[in-house]
Image 1 (spheres, helix red, strand yellow):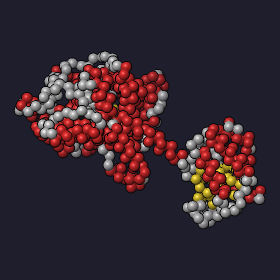
Image 2 (cartoon, helix red, strand yellow):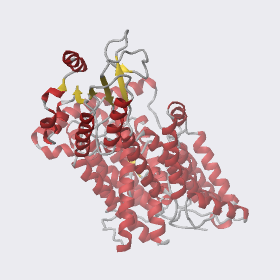
Image 3 (tube, rainbow, N blue to C red):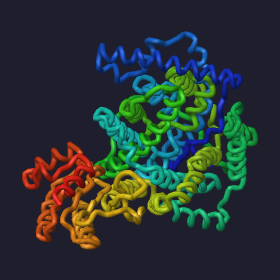
Image 4 (tube, helix red, strand yellow):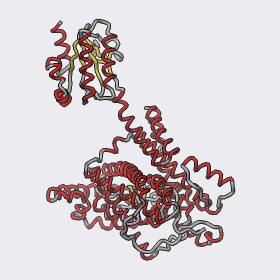
Length: 611
């Protein structure tokens, strides 16, 4: 069945299959050195311009333009043309996988590349439709669009506007650190879940039929039923499997663009043997001629909440991905990339594509290496790639009309396979098993409930993980081993000498509302379990980095409870900012300066002097 704009399913993006490299290894090294030198030149210009006009610092692409070297031009043009050969099939595949018409993938490639070239801090990062976002976009677009391509385009565009707004505001507010709150195991969990979701969503297209999507694992049941019912289009499946095998076999090649070879070969095969009409193989169809036009994506009132949630979710995922990739390439070129500027650049690209029939985009870990290997020096590579795609739409929109949707599904599946992280999870399982199971919980959340609820679950787990160490922290009774200087945990050094009548208690966390009562209980338990009657407790407070009002009140209650037993509460090594808080809370007036000591030795000496 010929279909011009298939609408339904998720996407991928990490193939790395087709990379066109420099002529030889030494050339690659020289190219990297040239990029490094160029980065330093551009960075110095960037800093100079920042003094002249503060607003220019938000457009680092202009500083690159001012110091552009003519020797870079040939490299950037060639790299841009090589990049375009990959951008076209991948952009179309990810659009279809996100539940949008294929042409939207090209619009969402052209516009972001042009905008990021001005606002993005990385000189070779490639932006566009991304596999990690496809499942999230599909989860919003598919149920709300009800099969209407125009509504799907509007929903995708509005998600891009939401995502772009969130990213730009977060970048201006200098919130680029927020993605660091998601630990590596949690990121692995939700990315593995998204990869599985994307892969499952593409199976119906690969087999040449369609199913009603009700959730990743439930879809598997429907797909299995359709296969058993004999709905498989064997010609479409053969084309899809052949495309997938070609991409995977050529993935390691640095000279042969596997995706380009696979999709062009499948399109030629379909056209040559008229498989669309003779064997009902679904194809892409003709793309609309011309460039994207400026338009505001209007959505209905009932769509606002899911679009807002989905837009915020893709903002988080896209920046988490982009910040990691940006830092990796910054390290390779020995330059610094401001994560806040990266947020602004990514947000500006999303805002722009939302106004030009695009959908949320991110950086690409498969297309960026193509640009680098082809010799990219600056953002001009992305501009050349965007202009090449625009030229294709103007002069040859029918070039890929025979591209089978099963081949597009194979492109997405190949990228989804690249999203899975297994090796490092094995390492995490070996060294920290509870974090491995956190990752598995995130993975299960995405696989069972879908991308957006699963990402929400990942955030909740991340917050719980963040709080857990402070909620139930480690504490220790200290003594003095004979052969080690200082005071150490008596559970690890049973031979350590404890001072009669004195409890040295260490608390390894900030004191706040969630652990204040536990702190009080453990101090009282240490007093009760002391082998000698206790007259003084000294809290070794070096690890205590903060105290809140609840914890301050708990300290006052603890002091009352200890005084009732004839025990004095003292503190050693408390940091000055924490002391300042205790002054505001009135505890300094209560305790007095004499109960605070700069070191444990000073507190012990005072105790010995008093006895």
